[in-house]
Image (cartoon, rainbow, N blue to C red; front, side, top):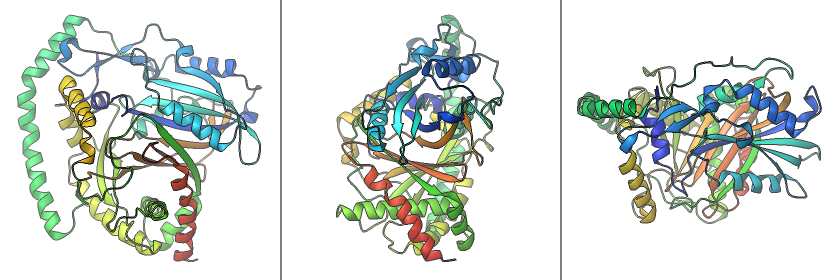
Length: 466
């Protein structure tokens, strides 16, 4: 029996009609590389054949009686690929703007929890900037099933390094067992009875962490603190409507800047994001005097002691230097602060977030989230953080999705009440793809932000010099 971890289940409990907890990806494909001419029916059949023995694609959630414990994964005995892979066409004239509007609409729709929590929309008729027709796949997976790393691994089941080569990841064979109602109830009762003992084990290291964090704060070596962010137009109660934009950056240039400045790729990406946000807010006379605060998810997959669970992540907080005009000064500031944040984060148990998430009660947690949204509390208390920024490492070589070369791969994370903007960057065959998703009411034109990313890379490049 595969029980969801507390962290995986929390993404189910956090979901509301407005706060959708799926992650998305926009894949722009070149069908000319396929070994046989593209047709939707053939692509749908190939995907169906590839995923039928992969539990990550064919399992669904089953609740525990009375909501006494987190749900479990069971195999969908009625799995039907036609319920998961759909066909659409971009409205005329079929350009970037129409594609982004269509993807934003799809991102606004919830996943059906009675089936495996993923779907793909194959979008035809898109023409890129050169006028060449491409096929776009808009993929959605619930955060309860994947984090950044596990999501990339799952998609790898459908990708190869040559058009006709085998998938990058071998097919999994172990499917979750379907337990009876009595077994579910019995395990839930035992888990509830032992929860106080587990709580005691978690409290001691957490108390020690608080003491150490206070010491770091006094020495000025702590990561940025939550609830210290300035308020912006995208920090409030969100709706279900989304806006999406994408941009490409030269990964070699980012690496050159990293080497010349003695920083990291992540430092450079955050500095570019800080500059883009500064420019976006300044254009609207909204630039706050203090720096924006970002939550940066961190994978703990290599250091976690837990074997189960799809999500193995933690997070750190970092100031983006939006109060600094000079791009090179911003980069060096971020490098110093990020080093402190990493050292602070490394002092925290890799499983701390997962340990505490085990105590998320299904009914009360969901009720609390809905109450928080209905009372618009995100607009009443100090801002926890302004946005989420993720950096997901991608393949260094070209990949092929069902035989079609992937020309762009932009992941998109969820947005939250109080932080209605998510920026995700992913490297892919020499490019750094930037994907931004926001609550449409808070940021109607996400492209107005994203178009500053290439400009900020150029500014930083000139500041660093040769």
